[in-house]
Length: 432
Image 1 (cartoon, helix red, strand yellow):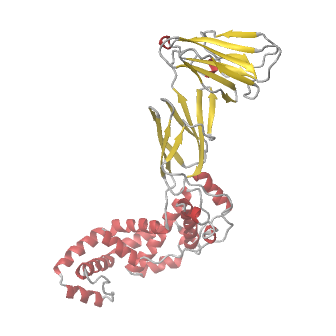
Image 2 (image 1 turned 90 degrees about the horizontal axis):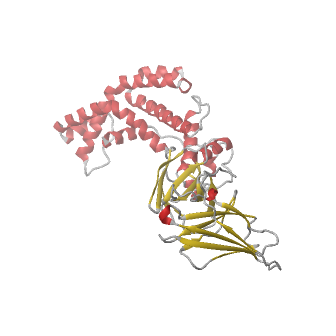
Image 3 (image 1 turned 180 degrees about the vertical axis):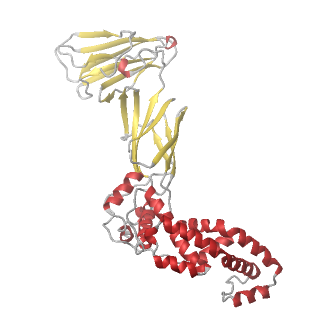
């Protein structure tokens, strides 16, 4: 089968890669993703944001890039504890799919798969040759088997008689002679099939074919017909690919080859990631794309992901979510300190308590936890709905806890307020 394709390549015409007229690609850089792509929700990194939403408390990392250089990217995430891992694709124009999102223990994973695959001019030519292969392969195999009964001298004589050059590979001369013989015999019988395929192509793309082309095909030999068919089929494939990318435009008999070749070459420079390696070097070829084409392609390749991690919570714990917490005014006037007191009982589905701190500022107030008890106070989490303080039991036994809030600047006030946890027995509403 490879031998047949090799013969097709030798028979096909060389294609001109010409840069069309148009504007430059633009100054915005193209940013490919790393592959594999790794996130760490455990680290207090700048890109990690607190998430306080109706889905609960979590963390979010936003990713932005263009799906170039790769069409299949593996994404993994380290999670602080078992929980729910979620990815939201925020670009509605993106032709990139998020698949197989899962969280297993402290590891999250997903696959990012681009629908725009890489295609070069050589790839389009090969696909066109595959179509011809379906027609010519049975005949080729027939004559290749027939050539086994012929001596090398007979095969050389056949090539001379039909004005064909001798094979280049002298070490495997007999094998190459058989291939050339089989291919030439196949071509002799392919003319009717090629005329039929050309007629179909002319119906599909009448703007690419003239009446002179059709008249010429009636008398042309197989090699000429093959050349024309490969050109038409190859550029149909290129046009279909560009349409998948959201590109295209009007073409006619005079410009369809140069225009489509130039556009595909420019798209290939971008999708393959070569544009990142030397944009100045490829500026001439990239002019085949208009600014509108570039914006369309950038939108299709751009990825904006909201990667989210939500810790596991006990569904039977009425205080497990942040929006079920009690509200506290951190800056009550005339008060030296506010003391929050509560009790956690993990065995009774009460492992977590939340407190909503109003007017909280780390520069204005101090939070200090009691030293006794098997509990942990997490750093305050600030979101658009306010600041939430999470208290979690670190053991399995019931434990009392206390947190004291006092102003950074000392005041003359001596009064202290103690606020006791009130069990949340009603279903809370969100948002407040």
